[in-house]
Image 1 (cartoon, rainbow over the protein chains, first blue to last red):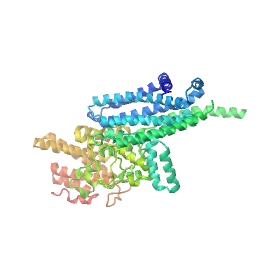
Image 2 (cartoon, rainbow over the protein chains, first blue to last red):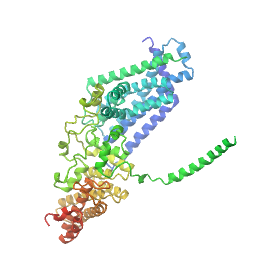
Image 3 (cartoon, chains in turn blue, yellow):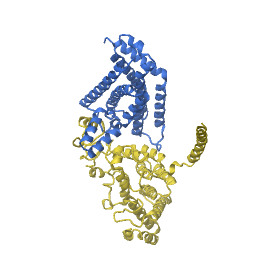
Image 4 (cartoon, rainbow over the protein chains, first blue to last red):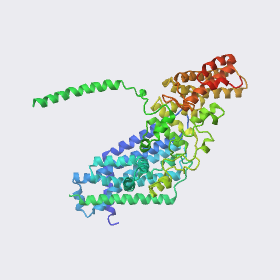
Length: 261
Length: 321
């Protein structure tokens, strides 16, 4: 509470920077353009082919938000050192942990705003196509996507202090997009490896963020079959996201503290 | 110094040369000429896709059209991802009395298919085979997942149609996409289904499977029209003839393409598989049946003499001859 104003001020500066840099506009425009293109496709003059549009839109929403978050998050901490804007900030009584938290809140606000816009377009599109919205699963998906963005933000912060911002953005997006493939790869390799290899796969599974756990789009897509997740599963996923975000955040904080001014 | 200058000139000369070569090469690129990335033989394709490498690469298998085809399989199973399994339980001739139904069953999912299909492994394994512990539990909870021992869920094939449209646009040589897409499209709109297969034939004029597919749709159309009107008017007769022509053309192409070394199970060299053998046999049988009805036993007998050199089992076809 003591540092709430500082967090708000830092978060505000992040959102203002995102607005000023215009990258976010390009990403939103590209996503909306592709979504519009998908909705305008004429498939054999048949109507009511909702699942296809659902899948395309949900994929685009997740992808573009992840790209926006990664690009924005990796720049936050290194840029402060490069442009020497960290000095006036730290001259004030703002702990570095609060500084990082403010940056994370700012990135998440931008992610939330982008995703909210995409969800609005999705709802309008489904309404236009007379598609069922399955509100329970949809809101759970939105919530899980938000948790995923938090995880991605803290991971991107950590990576940006380990490698250059460009490399950090590449690695963050690689981890995001390859999460599913890497999961399947680990499952296949586990049967082929022995003790040391299996230990490594365990380490990989528990050390790397499992973004795939926050993708409920498969159930949203086939919502006529699947029920919303139980509270215990939602609670477990929330705990997973918070714990891993905290761990990566603490790692980023430790590196940020050790970084010479 | 002179040496460095020489290198510099060499580089300056090479850049426009490479640029010119790249332009010439690019002009020769025909994306539709691509045929790699998949086997003609369904069984061979599935065997390869079941390999460790394919499993590891997961979604990124063989080609974009194959990926989309996998997606249609997932849609059919309510989003549940199973490992490729359709070769293991492809219906055989003994399973089906009606060969048209047999042909369709290979493309779609008949009602009894659901009961036969259980025990096929899922991409995300069950808890007793998943080393990830609670992460695996969460994964199964979040993803559409069903215990492999339980019967599969099967959904309406209508929602697959956009994927068939996109996959055949992406790769017009994807014959399987046209055949399977036409099967589902015919449930909605037969005219569109015929147009779709015809589009496939424009890109793949030698694909006898497409002639068989179009013949089946036209045959159904003719049968239904005849049943509705209660008589065989010239229009309906014309529809029967169109179906016959498709089967005949399909049979001719199939016989020309069929290798000599086809074994009892329908497999032969050059990727010839059980599905091709069934389609070839279907084309011949349907041609004989329709010829017998509209042109009489003499005309049918001539065709049968031609076909039974390859398929001796056609000696008794049609049975009421």
